[in-house]
Length: 326
Picture 1 (cartoon, rainbow, N blue to C red):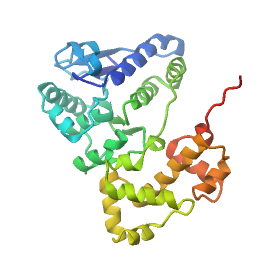
Picture 2 (cartoon, rainbow, N blue to C red):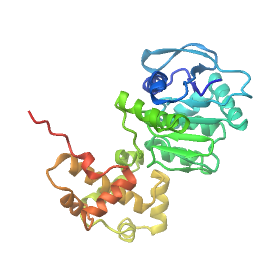
Picture 3 (cartoon, rainbow, N blue to C red):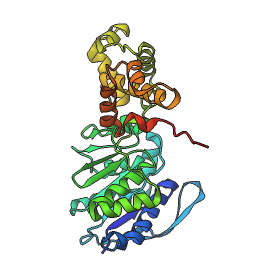
Picture 4 (cartoon, rainbow, N blue to C red):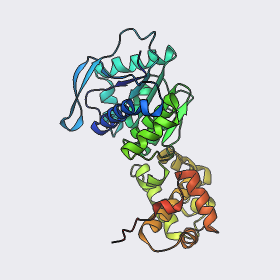
C-alpha cells in the first residue's frame, strides 16, 4: 500500500516534478528521526517507463494501477507548465491526459484524495472534481479557471486550498507548499518541520504578495489603467464610486469588468495595489514601517501589519532586505 501516488504526464513542468520527488525522498530518510511511520510513495504515468519532461529532463515511472479500489494513497499531479487556454485544451485532448483525467475522477469517486498545483489544477476541473469547491491555482491563470469553472470559487490569494477530497496549490513552486501540507496532514508536524529545515523550505500561506494586478488581468487595459490611477493617488486612493465616475460607468459595471478580468472585487483590486506598493517601499527604500503605512494610506503601522499578516501570511519586516555586516 502506498501513501502518495505522483501522477506524471509527458511534458510536465520539470521543477514541479523534481521538488515533489525530492521532498518525498527526503521525508523517507527523515521519517525515522521524526518518529513517523515509513513513507511509501511511487512515481506513475499512464503507460509507465521513462517520461520526458519540459527542458529535456526525464523521470522513470511505473504504470498507474488498473485496479484502484483499495488505493488509499493521495494522488498528486505536479504542475504542467501550461500558460494559455489553448495550451490547456490541446494538452487535455491527448490520449494520456484523457486516461489520467478519468483515473483521477474514479479515484475520488472511490473515496480517494487528489492534489494538484499550477495548471494541473485544470486537470482536476476536467475530471469534474472542482464543482462547488474553493480552490486555487497559478494566480495569473485564476481568472481563466473561474471563467471555465464558474461553479467553483477560485481564491487566487491562497497558496494552498483544501476542500474535502481536493487539495490545490498556486504557481509552479507552490508545489513545495503543497507537499509540506500533505506531509503534515498525513505524518504530523514533526516530519513536515524536519523536511522543511533540511531543504530550507519556508511554508507560505498566500500568493497575495506576488500578485501583480495588471498581469492578473492578462493585459486588460481597463484594469491596468485603474491600477495605475490608484497607485498615482496614494496615499489617498480613490473610492469605488470615484473610480466608476472617472471611468464613466456604474459601480456595478465597473465591478463586473474587474471581476471578469481578475476574479477580484474592485475593493480587493485597490487593496492589492496598495499592498504591492507597500511591499516595494519596504524592499527598496529606507522608510520605516510607520512611514510606509502612511505612504499607502493606512492610519498606522498596526493596520498595515494586520493586513499583510492576513493576506500575505507575513509581517512587513519580512520584506526588509538582509544587510550583510562585513
